[in-house]
Length: 359
Image (tube, rainbow, N blue to C red; front, side):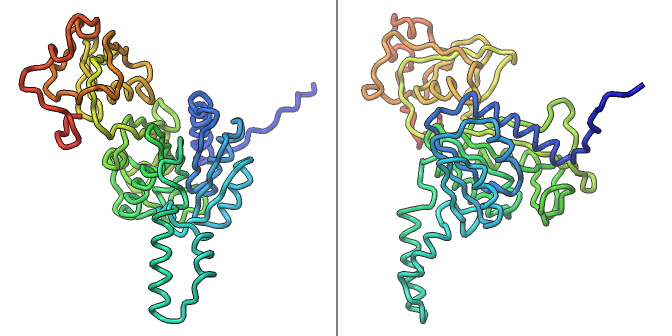
């Protein structure tokens, strides 16, 4: 009896297995939430096949910016970017301000023969990169880092996160794909099956999350390559290395205004706490400022809260600063318009501001 022709199963490395899982998740997140006119920055694209696998099933966004420090890897990524795509060769991987093209242009304008010539060139470069950075401030809707953080020292990684925060728009989103371990590793190490890795810095899971929080991001969500007992990519001593994608948001900075709004946490947990320390007991009307209300209605919080707006909500330009001493629970009369906002706050009101630290 003749057997049907069945393709032999292809062995897939642990790296390719995990990368495919995270790429599929990124495709889903980008396809379901990315606006048609979005600007997406792929940072370090070309180190892995993440960009190729993620972009394969997505329509090209209006603008794609590809930034990398390795010329060969950058050339690989340009072919995946589609049209229109813009590529920048970074002078240092952690710095999205400085690119090789701008340096080359300045070198052609300056003749460096002595120390004075060098200092003049350095001053011009500093001025240029400050005023015209390679990736401008608040220019990206989405920033995707392709294992960038593993290729930097801890100090460089802190600078890189500050750069990520700088280039994202107010409501921008950061996907940081990287390797983490369950126990701290003393020094950079080679990771089995990682492409052209050399020695990589692999932070422990909590340190990686804390670094994002310290950089000013909020709503951090951890996407593992697999959810039910995700297998380790590699084991180094007792430490297990895994591939993850952190999804984080910008936007919790700025003043807090009182619009009489409240939110109700749906559950399933008894209560939750946000990145500013606000506590939301399940089923209770919690008073929030306009900024916090907007944050909880979008991003990674989407669907977790019911938003309640006041029928007497003023225009934002006419609103007063939120009172830090406002009772945590919002009286229903406030949102129904039966009680003024001042009636929900104690007499010794304290305006919420960047200095007070209450929001």
